[in-house]
Length: 467
Ligand code: NAP
Image 1: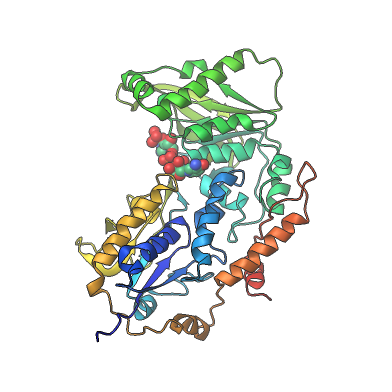
Image 2: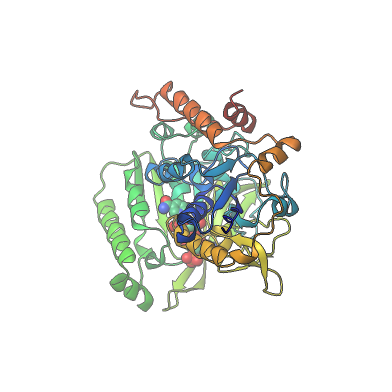
C-alpha cells in the first residue's frame, strides 16, 4: 500500500483579497480536491485583523466593495485555512523561519505606498499622499489618530479611482459618513473641516480618465456638493474620438460628464461645497509660504493625437491650502526577496519569484499587486492568483522541503518567541465587538450604525485574544 502523501505546507503572507483568493483557489484546485495533493495553508498578516486592502484601502462609503469581505469571510470560516494576525514578515518572521516550517511561501503583501511625484514643494506642510489619508480614514492601526483638515481649497492630483475616493471623502459632510464604519476619530476630524472646494486634476483629457463609470457617477450622490466642470477642458483629439466611439467605459463616462455640463448651466441653487474636475493640467510645482502649501501651479497640456499629452508652456496658479497626490500606489520591498524598484513589485515571472539572474527561487511565489503592480479592480486579483497557484502546483514535486510537517508546530514556534498573534476565532471576537459598538451608536438619521471600527493595535489584539 502506498503511503498517503504528507500535506504540502504553504504560508501565505498577507490576508487581503490577493492572499485569501490564492489560498482559496489552491484548496479548490483539482489536485487538492481529489486528495492527490493534500495541503495545509496558514495565512499571515501584520495587522491584528484580516482583509488587508478591503479593511484598510476601500473607502468607507463603498459598502458594495467592502461586501467582498463576506466572501473572504466564508473562505476562512471553513476552517481548513489558519489565520495568524499581528505577525509581520521581516520583523517577527524571517525567510529562514518560513523555510523551516513551510514548503512554499506566497507573498501577497499588496502595494500601499504612494508613488512619488518629484516636483518642487512636494514636501511642504499640507502636501499629502493619498495612501496615508486613506489609511487614516480607514482606521489603520499604525497611523496617527488625527489628520490636519484645515484647508478650504484642496487639490487632488490624479484621475484614477483613488483620486475619486479621496475627493469624495474630503468633500462630503461628515455626518453623511456616519452610515459607514468610519471610526469615531475620523468622524470628529472630518466634522471640523472648513473645506469648500475640492479640485481634482487630470493631466490628460476626459476621454483618458482612469475612473470607472460607477465611481464617477457616484460623485453626484454627495449631499450639498455641486460638481463643477470647465468647458475649455473638453477638447478631443483623434485618439479621444476613437475611445469615445469604441470604448464602452469611456462612452458611458462621457455621457455622465456631458449630462453634468448641461445641469451645471441650468443650476439655480448652489451647494455649500463644490467638487471640481479639471482636465489636461499637469502639476508642476506646489507653491508655499513659511513651509506650508499656499497653491498649486499647473501647466496646461494639449493632446498629442495618440492619447498622450504635451505641455503648452501656459501655467496656471490655483490657491490651495492642501494637496493630495493620488497618482498611483507602489509596492514595498520585502527583506530577502528580489524587488524591482522601477515597478515596485517582487521580481517574478508569472508569480514565480526570480533572482537577479532571472532564475526561479524554489518555493517562493507572489500574487496580487506586489506581483503585477497596483492596477486593476479587486476581481482581477483572482485570475492573477490562479496563475500563481497553477505554477506552484506544477512545481510541487520539488517543493516538499520543510523538515517539520506538524501542523501545530508554527503556533508553538510563535508562542516560543513570545509573539502575540491573533487567530480567526479572535477575528470573530473583534468583529462582534465592532458590531456592538455600532449598535450602540447612531447615524445622522438616528439609526444604529452597522459597525464602528477599533483602531488601536493593542486594543484590537486584546479584544481578539478575549482579554
Ligand atoms: P490609477 O487608476 O492608475 O490612476 C492613477 C492616475 O494618476 C492616472 O490618472 C494617471 O494619469 C495619474 N498620474 C500618474 N502620474 C502622474 C503625474 N506625474 N502627474 C499627474 N497625474 C499622474 O491608480 P489609482 O487611482 O491609484 O487606482 C489603483 C487601482 O485601484 C485602479 O485599478 C483603480 O480602479 C482601483 N481602485 C478602485 C476603486 C473603486 O472604487 N472601484 C477605488 C480605488 C482604487 P495617466 O492616466 O495620464 O497616467
